[in-house]
Image (cartoon, rainbow, N blue to C red; front, side):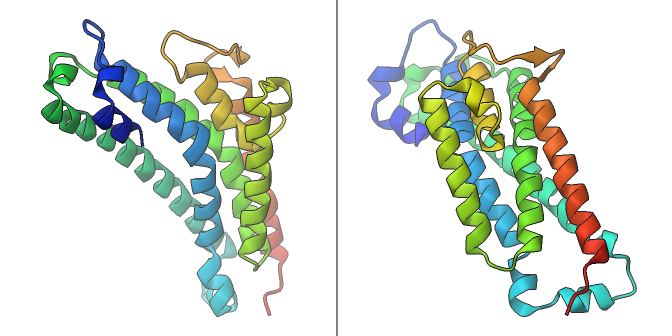
Length: 232
């Protein structure tokens, strides 16, 4: 969407003497963290165990001569790899699509400036940490309940509530909703030179520490339940 806006409305975005990479990355980062990231993680986590539930293959997996923890944490590792791959694809798309824009509209002058990859990676790392709470919560929900609609419904409801809080600028309420954390990060570091004043502790944002805590709590809870679950 950001690419199409820059492609079809070039006159609105071209700013002579300003690094075009800054505005382009800001737009892509904001749109992704505020709108796409949470629904993507909800659907990914809900799909991760869908096959095992539908085919009733949990009993087969747990009958194999491997510990339950290996099955549980191997899927959790797959989650990490999927998220990391998503961020890498995101970076590649921004970089490559900018040069496509430059080819169509040379006046953007992307080739005259250097992208700040260090700043990009720093912001994406904050975004990655902020989404871990939602990932941990929905990994636990997707394993605990067979119904695919339930985790998706819970997630979308949480996301809608989070968006309402963000749009209404009720950041104090949003700080208690894990689904709002990527949006809070986007609000604070999404636009270069602007800040929403989200509290920080050293390098970390407070909501990132809560997100990490949620991830540890729900993944540990899920492992404990799986360890003692009697699969029929």
